[in-house]
Length: 370
Image (cartoon, rainbow, N blue to C red):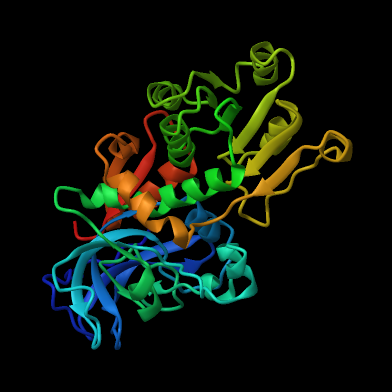
């Protein structure tokens, strides 16, 4: 990845427009370049955040890899940092406060909001956090501008004693919590989580936390399988070596799983989810977010067998405080999911680790100030 040399990082909490910062700018053709760019200017009701940590999310990786949106953009949305400047009229936050931010907030008034389908709200689809160019989250930069509607409803204070790294999990955990709310899992359900990357492991941890006992997981990497069992799964199988359908039938009197959460994206994984479930089961597609991803289902497996196949995408404003409280809790060990902590100049390596998982890689965090 081309990196501009000699760019001085902005320091302190009083950055102003015209000063230079480093940012990883998406330039098209799957290319991201670390280069100097102006510190964002904030307006009334807005905040400037000095980014201390940002998680690498597969949603951003898909946008970069498949060139889903036109450049230039600065991605990164699992953002935690320090309030570096406060716009006129802001009274809720002060200089130096430690916060994490959501980049989407719904309008609260439209048809979709009235049905709590927040991710389909036109206002929600607008990105309210930016490091410059077309707003895209901006966490892969030293500073981000937080727009007024996000300041009002999309910022969470980080308690004393909680690290910036832990705080980056508030947004992704919220998305998982929303998915579980939609799935409406019963205590006696047999649940399988396909994929034990960072999101799959968050699902496993949340399901164990809510008391799901018949909880199973699949992946292809030994470390992830070991973590899945340690963090709550009854059993975890290598999907490349084990007949998962046979294992599920053996544990459910020949029926199959009640609920499957598809937390990974791979050819054939949705078809596998259908194969291992019973008639009447629920299958949640969580990782299927790219228009390039397709799958084929037998109509009778859904219609005649009454399986419910549904999606869950992005976060819920209703779950912001709950998701934050879970992350703040020392009994919920999200730090176990972090495998790599990298400076901004190594973002390309971090994206490759996240995009092509290998033994030893899990959640990758970027520290733009390093």
